[in-house]
Amino acid sequence: MEVGPHFSDKAKEDYKLVIAASDGNQNAYTELLKRYKDSIYFMLLKMVNNPIDAEDLTIEAFGKAFKNIQQYSPSFAFSTWLFKIATNNCIDFLRKKTNNHISIHSQNEHGEVEESVHLTTTDLDPEESMIKDQKAKLMREVVEQLKPRYRKLIELRYFKEFSYEEIAINLDLPLGTVKAQLFRARELLYNILKKKEHRI
Image 1 (cartoon, rainbow, N blue to C red):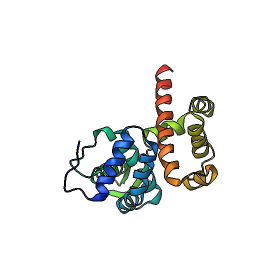
Image 2 (image 1 turned 60 degrees about the horizontal axis):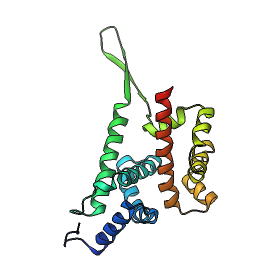
Image 3 (image 1 turned 180 degrees about the vertical axis):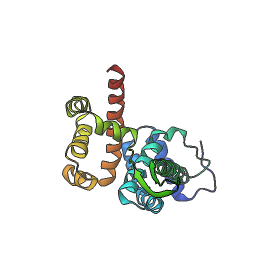
């Protein structure tokens, strides 16, 4: 499928990378992530006003885009499609966060509200939640099923609680590669855990 004549040179280059990524080229994924991760991150940071949430949402946005890359249509630029995924994912995140506010009201004898306390529950996304909730023994057993490079990433991130930057230094890898591979590792781990959960 050809791209439209209105595409900029950069958009045309993006499309070539998308085609390569669709064929399983890991370098193409890394290049796309490198091109847009900063602009996606700063857009999300403005929306959530929290660097940690913005970082995680950036990874999720790329993860969703890469997972569904076959659905991309060159009738519009890849960057437009990616930003839409990131925005929609962030809106869902904010909606869930808002829904997690629980109000507890204290009333006086006339039924008037004297005091209102807001408790906030912080829900993790399904992968994070399942990863953190499993017992260490089960986790170790499941992690052993991953390929060595993914196993190392999961161990550093979840068992040793390294930051993305610390993992990049430890493994001598570009930060973009660490983020892309960690998303893949997390997804693989989540799928293994989900299957295991059904058997329990």
